[in-house]
Every structure is written in structure tokens, then in C-alpha cells.
Image 1 (tube, rainbow, N blue to C red):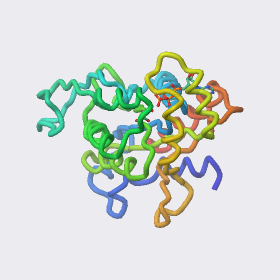
Image 2 (image 1 turned 180 degrees about the vertical axis):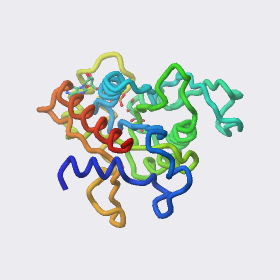
Image 3 (image 1 turned 135 degrees about the vertical axis):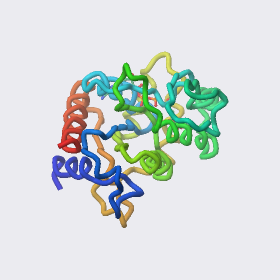
Image 4 (image 1 turned 45 degrees about the vertical axis):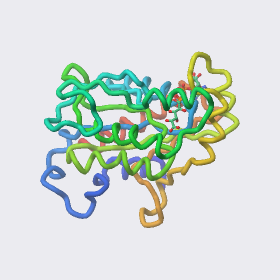
Length: 248
Ligand SMILES: Nc1ncnc2c1ncn2[C@@H]1O[C@H](COP(=O)(O)OP(=O)(O)OP(=O)(O)O)[C@@H](O)[C@H]1O
Ligand SMILES: O=C(O)[C@H](O)[C@@H](O)[C@H](O)[C@H](O)CO
């Protein structure tokens, strides 16, 4: 399958969990879809750098999934079981302070540490950003395991107009160790990289679903020979293509 064909499949596929029978929401004109792009991969793979550039280039709303101070205007009427603030305006840390402190010490997070963070991100997928921003989101989130990505996919089951897709930034461990080492002023240091590669479950978009394939993931090489500009150009082009195909 060529890159273009893979991306065509990425744009056309039904939301996960709803692939057998198209619902009424599925039959809506495609230009009513909201898109959420998760930019994923281990620490220092370039999630923030690439997600910001993608949002800027395609005028999408950028959400830093690690940001403990992110404000979100939530349109849900029910009270979220994880939130301590009432709707409609929600102020909620994605990664709690304790997680950030743990990572700052170079200690890897556990599944339990990540559970509330992933759940919060999944629940807030259905919250629309303020009307002054684009309804389409680009969210950074490491999403290292298949199970974590499955939690993030759940949002589309609760809002039929959502199209959730992933961009996985792929580079060898030694390249990311070097990038983390050279990066200044970030709580995550190079001592976190190895543990993330240890638990990483690489997505395989071209494998059949019954063999564990994840066709909603776009894998982008961000290795040593690929500079930021080149990666941004590729990601913007492929995302634009998928969104356009999904809106015909
Ligand atoms: N393609 C690239 N080539 C070279 N350097 C890059 C590339 N992409 C990002 N960088 C640099 O690598 C470092 C890590 O990037 P960034 O902070 O965006 O990663 P991240 O995945 O968001 O990290 P974290 O998960 O730890 O927050 C930064 O210094 C950034 O400038
Ligand atoms: O799943 C995790 O362990 C965390 O989300 C990390 O990937 C952090 O996001 C990153 O290391 C620093 O930003």
C-alpha cells in the first residue's frame, strides 16, 4: 500500500467501535465532522514542536496534553466524574502535579499513574473548544501503548461526529535520548527515554485489524536525517489530505 493509499484509508474509515453499522450521525454530510489529531510518541520525539506547527498551518486548535494548567470550555451538561469544577467552564489538569514531579525525577509513570490522565483526555474530546477557536483539535499525548490509544478512541463512540486519528512520530531511542539531552527547560529529561521505549507498543497501520493493526494511525519518520521543517511539511500535507478526503 502506498503512503497515499494508506492515508486515503485513514480518511475514509468509520470511527472505531462503530464500524459495522453506520449510525445516523455517520450519515451526516462529512463536512460536519470534528477532527481530533493526537500527536504521539515517546518523550522528545517532537510532539509539541510538530503539533504546534500543524495547528498553525491548518488553523486547528492546539491542546498540550501534558499541560497541568490547560483551560477548557466544556459543553457537556452532565458533571464529569473526574472533575472538581462544575461545567460549563472547566479547569482541569491533564497530568496531575504528582505525575509531572515523578517524571521530573526521571521515574517512569505506571499504568495507574496514566489512567486518570488518559480518561480525562478521552472525556474532554467531546467538549467543544470556545467558538473563537477551530472545533478541530491537535492534542499531544505520548499514547505509548495500544490500550492507551484505545481509551482515546472511545470519544468517537460518545460523539458520532468525531473523527479521531493519531500521528506517531517514529525515531530510534538514541536519537530521542540526544534530543532530550540537548533540550533545555523541560521537566522531562533524557533519563525518561529508555523506560518509554521499554513499554512502547508501536502502532502498525498497514496490518489487518484482526492482526492488531491500527489503520487510524499515520506513522511519520522523525529520525536523525529528518529536520523539523521537513517533518512539518510531510505531516501538514498528509493531514490536509486525510481531512480533505474525509470531507468530500
Ligand atoms: N525533527 C526534528 N529534528 C531535530 N530536532 C527536533 C525535531 N523535532 C523536535 N526536535 C527538537 O527535539 C526536542 C524535543 O521536541 P519536543 O519538545 O517537541 O518533543 P515532545 O515529544 O513534545 O517531548 P515531551 O513528550 O517530552 O514533552 C526539542 O528540542 C525540539 O526542538
Ligand atoms: O506517558 C507518559 O509517560 C507521559 O505522558 C510522558 O510521555 C510525558 O508526556 C513526557 O515524557 C513529557 O512530556
